Length: 264
Image (cartoon, rainbow, N blue to C red; front, side, top):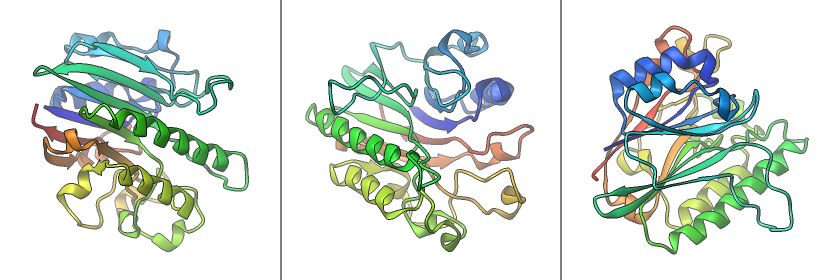
């Protein structure tokens, strides 16, 4: 089974690119981020024609996540729960969970789009950290179920210096701040495994290249798109690939798909 994640940076702008990739890569489950569309306007017809079930959690012009699946959804949950039940739900659409039956067991797959957090001297950075704290709390509860769980998405976190072309250039950025990295590590310390780092320690593997200053042509990239897996899911990991070639297509996203080969 192929399970992928991809920040497409706008479904309307990247619709044709997405369709071409789906036809070529044929993922069983694809988690999308930054769809930038309300649910009712998501152009899902061509995706459904390829055999996918489509579930979205969107908002107008910003954020938004989706899961495309060849498997039927048993359950869909939208929005990351608030730590304080008395607070209003988060208005930003950044989290959707799909539940599937796979060979007699339950598989939970999350598409998430973690806040960027910049500029760090604004309310955006505390919001990022708070969101990560909420995610940690949610994961901690989910791991008690001892089920396969895959958290796939754009984490907006550069885990290590080897995950960016120029570490010094990212110092102080919300993606590379110690507070962000430590929260990413706390997720791993709960028992989650980061798929790519289960298979290789190589540096220079990137998933994002800015549109500016020839970043793609110079390979000045960063790695911020990750798949974290519960122990039950990690035991079924067979490989990881980064489809960097998609960045060379016409009208590409600034991110590329990352996918795992999952033995289910």
